[in-house]
Length: 414
Figure 1: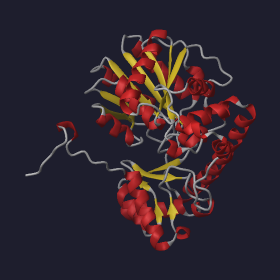
Figure 2: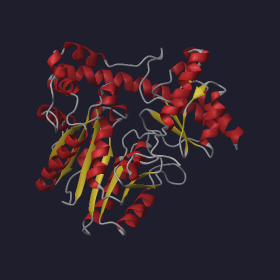
Figure 3: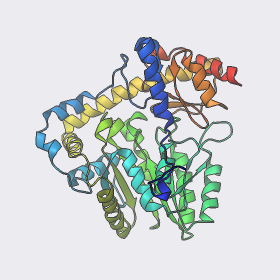
Figure 4: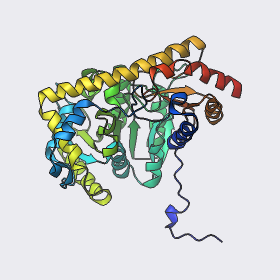
């Protein structure tokens, strides 16, 4: 007879993360064969062509110039006022925010997603996201007592966003629920690299507004963790201009992260931002999430908040950072273009890639395909619907030939 001391809802919880398991297998291979012979397409960070973690020079410069007190001081529970104001400026640069806005500092983008799920989905009810998705969404839902349901991200010919599946699933859930939280990871979706275009955004908002006008409470969370790797700033953030004429019961949220945009993965700093036509809804947002901040991490990394604020307040530093971001974005883009070109040439079926860290390949038996690739010392992440290749971590030199080897591995496992 086994002995359990955990509460009933926590018994038998075990974290099984495909990304970190694949990364561990890769690191084990590196120890045996050497890094130069191994292709690491598992990890969601930008590695330079030597396999070292890439760091933006402007971020490093500002980080090293800061005072010790910037790192050791407590930050306010909801985040520094200058930090949350800077988040607003980053989101709405050169645009007018016609709605009410606020933000709270969170433990990276993951913390922002956690708070959105914890506070904007009823316990026992469902949260909606796409079938291709980051697996941690489900872990957060499980942790907070919610269900995760999905719609088909792509239409049958893999040419674009499946509006019909999205609409049908929203309607299905709202027949059972009076409220619904939807998570859309765009632009530069993990794990596919897909970004909704302007027309697709229009259709999404049209669907959500129609249900809101029927009295349903709708919350939409745009997970923008990879936004700086999707396009130039003005293009990447263009979608926020669509958040106008919102019904009071349609809340827009964004999960912002410093991990990728500032190469500060380990500092665990981000923000949950909210946009609403209602001052009352935004005031509630601030207080509700401030409560959750106190209950989870109390307050967030002060030093990283100071760093973002310093860069945002200095025109020269902002321009330098944008150049750093552009350089890394081009690095990842060039690697991805090699893979996409060779996939098209060898007949490897991939889902639409529009930018970002990852490329996705549909496969009937992803685990078997991944294991087959291990023989070629290529390590990618097997997911439910296929394989994830991290263009961010594979050098240009090593990217040549990867698509063909994946095609061969898929063919041999059918």
